[in-house]
Image 1 (spheres, one colour):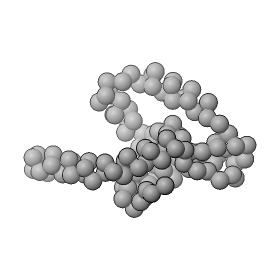
Image 2: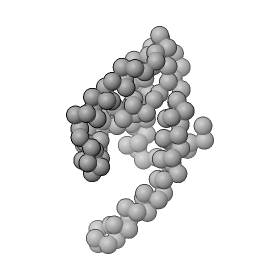
Image 3: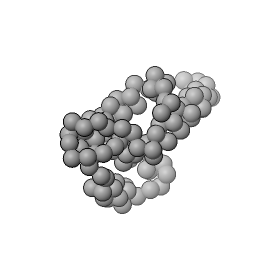
Length: 116
């Protein structure tokens, strides 16, 4: 995987570290996007609900689906086994890295317009 974690924010790196810890504790075979969402919620309790609201997605069905997805994740049977990123998680992180400079520029443009 060609992701430079130094390009992520400190909060993003904390969420990835938290996701890895969750995957190890639950003995998941790999780190899946659902685990990353749970980790984001643990590191910033307001982020996911805020995004769901912005996208007009109902929270209860989303969290129910997330819980169901977590229960369906394959286990490797050992809490001390090696945890790797799943292909889906690799795609999420690669896309996030590619979009990060655009997102930062976009945010700075809004700050400039608002004289912040």
